Image 1 (cartoon, rainbow, N blue to C red):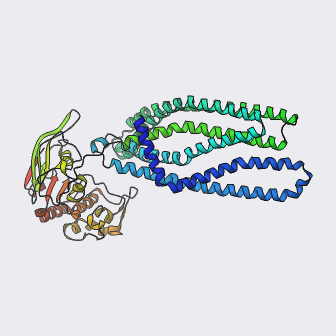
Image 2 (cartoon, rainbow, N blue to C red; image 1 turned 120 degrees about the vertical axis):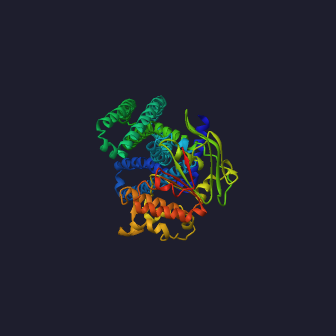
Image 3 (cartoon, rainbow, N blue to C red; image 1 turned 135 degrees about the vertical axis):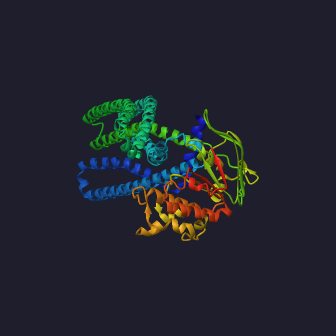
Length: 545
């Protein structure tokens, strides 16, 4: 645990260093604002005590102008602080989100798929925002509040020793209560956040699958699922809130005791002339400052456990090991060979002893029953799913020796059965990740089979510039599949893999696809997963799983 915390500390120090200039400026403004908070009551004491001085009226303009300047300065510092808070916390949160997202993209797929999508989304977004808020607002505020309390005690001691001692004693009691309560709140908050994550994952799944629910009338089943999910979340929330309310109640009681004792002592001292009216008012204000800062520190103590949970979950993701990468790049792929490869998940063996060979200039058709491991086999060739036995060779080099990231980006193109389009235009999706576009030249997308497959865009008002978003369902399933196929054709990779490419296409589009494959196959290795009988005449070899 200590190693994790040390690593975590290094991580967050890194974020502070990244924005060090902004951070220092923000802290400086915060400290200046805290200094004004301490100075203003002391200044008011002088004003009040001078009321009884007949000559005071001559200086009223000076006092008012000074107070106005101080107030405007405080307002300026407050605006600067809040502006810095928003900008800096967002910068850090976005950087954490970027680091987590960048890291998990390199983590083995077998590890990532263990996490629920909703869980990962919450961790990347919510926990990053929590940490940004902690590093920029809560932690500096905590330090500033400690300094304010110390400064307030010193000022009160200089005016009234008895109240100063009462201040010191109260701070000690609050501190003891903080350390006792934090462990209880941490454990209960951790359980609450865990059940909350499970509940939101279930909720997200139901929303995502609303069409399936309606088709099958799974209303009662999903309602029962909701009730089962909400029960532990409700129970853990109640347990945490009870503990939270108990801590808040004790703090409120202590506040009243401190305030009451201070008023009694000050009243007696005022009666005996041991304290002036101005000093009475100043100490009263310092008491209010102390109580408010104690309350904020108490809230920080309770909230800190939330940040600890966020720390742990972010650390869990950042500590995931990246997939192995040999680093050797291949210029062109001429052949792919598998020797006795096997894949298994737990006790389940998907397939074993697979010996295959794919050569440039040929089209290969992979068939088999659903669940036989056809798509898994393709992901194995890509190094996305690890083998439990055997070897995979590209040309004469073992996959373990190769730069798998370069291999996937440059040499291999995969069209999935269910296309996942990016937010943007149709053109953006066609050219997403293409090296030609990356180098500043637009690929030719209006030639050959690509032009024919994209003929449907002529019916759209903006053609290829038609926007595709999650809220704008512009394309049908078949049109999405055409975009996916055309993206693969435009990539012009050495190896082209199509998973059920004709499942949503009409007869005319299928004929166009077959013609295009026939035209380009001499320069590529083409692998097609399909049950479509029309594809058998196109293929040079059929592999059955």
